[in-house]
Image (cartoon, rainbow, N blue to C red; front, side, top):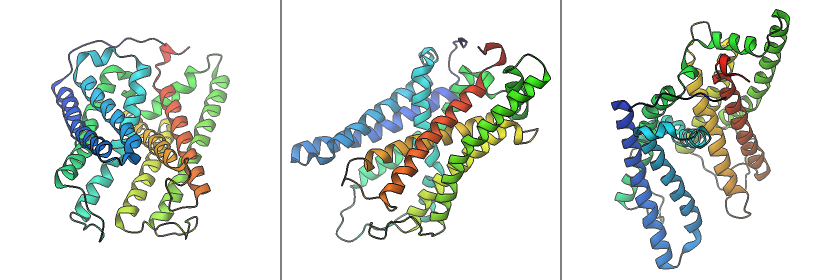
Length: 324
């Protein structure tokens, strides 16, 4: 499928959001560069590799912000734009509920005794970087995606489900119904994994202990539960988005709503699942709160579910006239 988007000057809101995203992530990048320099200088380079990975991610975030603000961002190949947008939104936009609620509930949580906190400027720069980037992406990403792929956000979700079924078959009503039913069954199977993760994370948020390793360091408290609740919310949004795009969300549900929620939710499952796997795979680096085998299975399922959801969303964005 090759559909060219009209190249035009970005609107003022999109430019402002893009530059704000790049500026916010520059603050985070500055902190990481300082950390790496200090670690190398003091000979404590245990975290250099991890910080180097976050530096690359920060540079990608800055590049994404500039792409949102500049006309050349519309000319970038889709295979380059979609993964960066997807992972960035999954990492940051999905954290907005947590960042907002945690800032209201615990504005000044003291550091544990014996553990020095970060210098004030680093704390401010990191917080401003994450929150500023997330808020900027909430504005800039939908505008960019709408300008480049307008058909993906047009119409109603119920109409899109009907078009999907009719677009896959052209030999009569019986064939269209059979193909549509098969596509719906596949979508429902894809919904199983994020639904199971939502149930698991909600159970732990509510204080459940099954599956948690009693020998692991406990991460109880409002902050840990808020993180779990945020993850559960993303999984629920992902399930609902697939449900709605399958024609079950109501006749008046606009397509842009499940598309946007599903895009962020699938990116969150993939990005955070892959990030946590990077910590779990090397032995002895990180001890999760749950049993190690369960944590590995949990995050592998999250990565797979995120990818499957993205494929489903991308297929639903193709206009009928462009299907192969």
